[in-house]
Image 1 (spheres, rainbow, N blue to C red):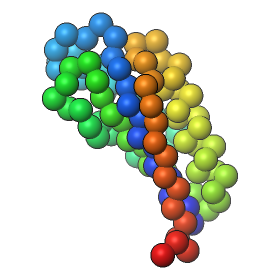
Image 2: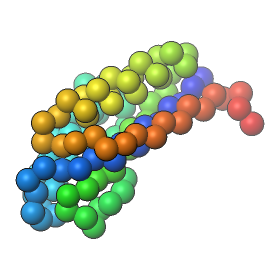
Image 3: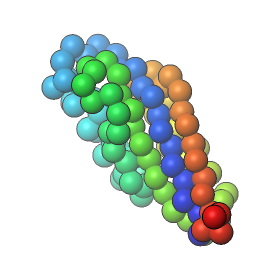
Image 4: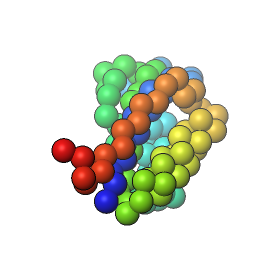
Length: 98
């Protein structure tokens, strides 16, 4: 079993309040969950209105499956016109890791 996580640092476009931020981030997180069957959430920079960190996690039987899902999630985030993908961090853990 393999567990993978992706943390994406995003810069939001024309957002001037935390309420406006929520209106942009909530649909992105929902789409990640729906399209890729992953766990996804806003995990950082909650007090900043133009920045957000989104975390994604997935589990699969093969490392390649985890990598493919995380690649697809990263591509989706990079293609969103309302955000700019600044950086990502990935982690892959095997159940045999100690």
